Amino acid sequence: MKIKVNAEACVGCGACTGVAEDLFEIGDAGVSTCKVAEIPADKEQEARDAMDTCPTGAIVEDVPEEKAA
Ligand code: SF4
Image (tube, rainbow, N blue to C red):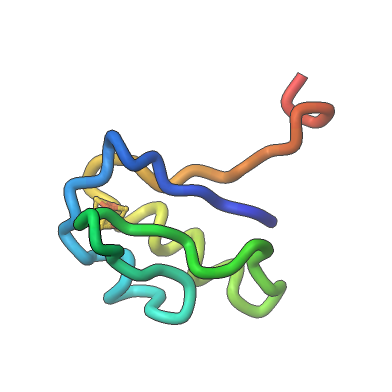
């Protein structure tokens, strides 16, 4: 799976980095970014936990367009 952070929704609270420090980091702009292009299978639960933890819903699954249609 791939995930992305909506920079406009992120408030830089750091909850995602607390839950999944291997997957997220707070960048210079004070918003979170996903550190990996593709979430490894053994980290998917961590990624979903981060999505659930984010107070603004800024973390979303990056669904390829052909699947999103
Ligand atoms: S938990 Fe959500 S709002 Fe907080 S830093 Fe992570 S992406 Fe941003």
